[in-house]
Image 1 (cartoon, rainbow, N blue to C red):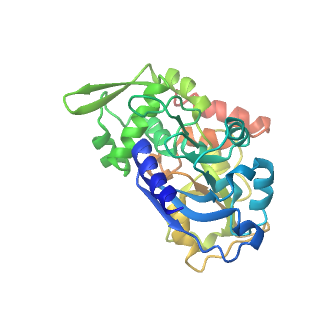
Image 2: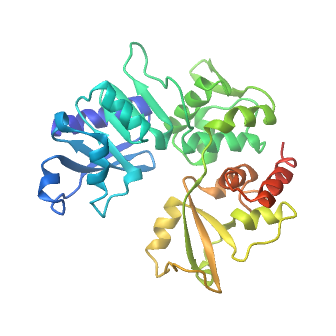
Image 3: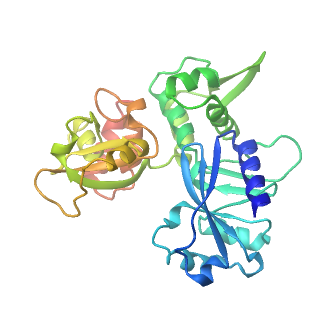
Length: 326
């Protein structure tokens, strides 16, 4: 197990260019029959956390049964699981991908949908074969450009200074944009320079299938608790500011996961039902303040957070808003 853990850290660091941390989780709370099959670790890749589940009985592993087992563990969020194994049959890996379950088999295959990454072993330099969904960092780079805040050519180091990510993370974002034919990346001396291909409307339409809803969860709290946090209005509140849509009954704000973790440590209480004086907090997979526009969340992230709503009024308001920016 120690060797597999070491190989996992080395492999992920090498292919993702992100900082990787792996720590064992005390498994005493696991039922006995589960402790014989799984070992739990906390895995952090860049700024994204997973519960890494090491398989102790790979020959007996069945994806459907595995999901049932994980749901018996209250401390685990099934959406944040990453299966780790020395080897798995091709058909089992295919089932995991169909179910959207992340997994890593060091030096063989990596599937991390939360980061928009999939990689299979091959000769030559490791790089993404394709990107079904951009990582949060890549989405930030793209929207930053759509907002007109990136020069014609820019390096990963320059992006890291502007956006607060590491240069390696920005390098990985350039890879994702390049293999998706959204941007052209050229090397000038020791520097890599990115140029987006087309105007903002063309790039937006090409990228849209790979973009994610930035909202990972929504919670309700008392609005009076937010006075010192200086959050950006989001959701229907922001949309009503950019269209003819009426303001919602409850104001909505957005904040990053890191900001939410800090807020959770205060005396702020989540309120499970609609009550006067409450508001909604959207927890985003990236920091909305990086992209904020005129005191509100940016229009592109706002569109992504609401585009699946079936309300015709919202659809019309989104269309009205996007006409202003494309």
